[in-house]
Length: 153
Ligand SMILES: Cc1cc2nc3c(=O)[nH]c(=O)nc-3n(C[C@H](O)[C@H](O)[C@H](O)COP(=O)(O)O)c2cc1C
Image (cartoon, rainbow, N blue to C red; front, side, top):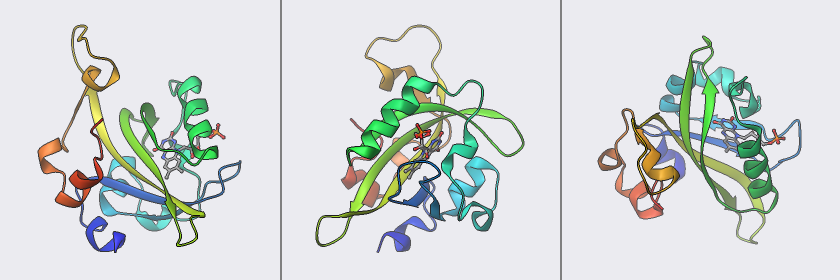
């Protein structure tokens, strides 16, 4: 079901296994938009950890917050500085959620990601208003993502 709408989505979507401790989580599937965002082919992404996108300016406190949310089986929504395969830096807005099986056990995590840019000046209203989407606007989100509330607080 997820793959059906995710495949051609303009929003970058990546699914990992549920192993949150290093060396996990491991990417199981990524859509074309995700491959495009990170500058690698979807086939090259399968089997590696999303940590490959991290670099000098990726903030450790945000990663700690991310790790805590994963360990607790909770949603993480935040902004991380990441690097593409060619070394270019970008800020990703990430909405990551656990996917549970019928017994309620977490089997995978799914993340919806998009590139954002920092707004000029000092807007008030916290993190959400400090960034704006680069290409994938809220209006472009599919109805399925809208109903999940992806990228909306
Ligand atoms: C579905 C999913 C997508 C992720 N996407 C990213 C990402 O785009 N960029 C990133 O820096 N970390 C991403 N992560 C987080 C890292 O895999 C890792 O969990 C994070 O660095 C915290 O763990 P650590 O403290 O062991 O490094 C993702 C994790 C999951 C489960």
